[in-house]
Amino acid sequence: MLPEETRQDPMADAAAAQPDGAQVVEVDLRAQLAAKDDEVRSLVDRLKRLQAEFENYRKRILRDLAAAEERTSDREIVAFLPLYDNLARAFSAYARDADVGAFVSGTERIFGQFAQLLDQKGVRRIAAMGEPFDPSLHEALLSIHSQKEKNVILEEFSPGYVRGDRTLQPSTVTVSQGPAQEEKEEQ
Image (cartoon, rainbow, N blue to C red; front, side):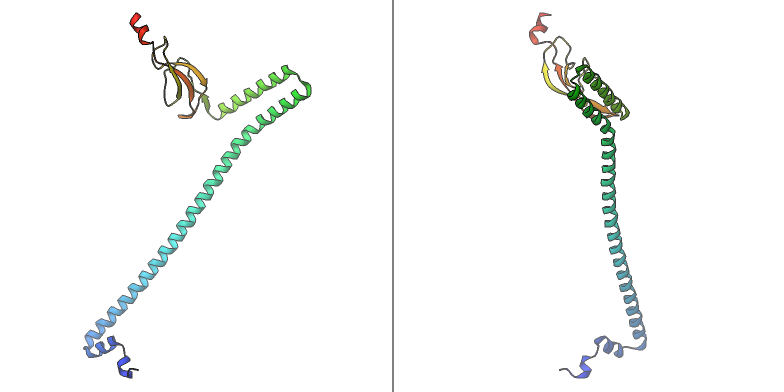
């Protein structure tokens, strides 16, 4: 073991060897260092709290967004439930009575309800037949030579729909390539 005097703080020994003015400066520097250490600890603690708060905020926003999506989906489903119920009633009545006329009439009313619902939602059908081909609204399945000018829609396989300025489903169509080469030469 070391003797008692050699286990003393070396800084204290250095301070004892210095004049009184230097000891005051050293004490002041130690106080400043301790204050800065406390400030750093405080700022690190604050940063950790802010990180935890932000993570909790992010999780809460994700939960709220998922809940809002679910509520929106529920509202859309609820809007279509009466149509589903009416179709079920129509099929049940047809199975019971086998009255084709009543079934067709009921189905036409349900189709009208669908059209009304789509209109309420701002959904409209894309015009296709005879219109110029627009790749943002139409999807070409075929391209054939015809008497019509180039890039005119000749046939619609399935309708397309838009809501506002967004295409929900493009129309699938046949597009004219214009007259064939031999037809052009004859003219």
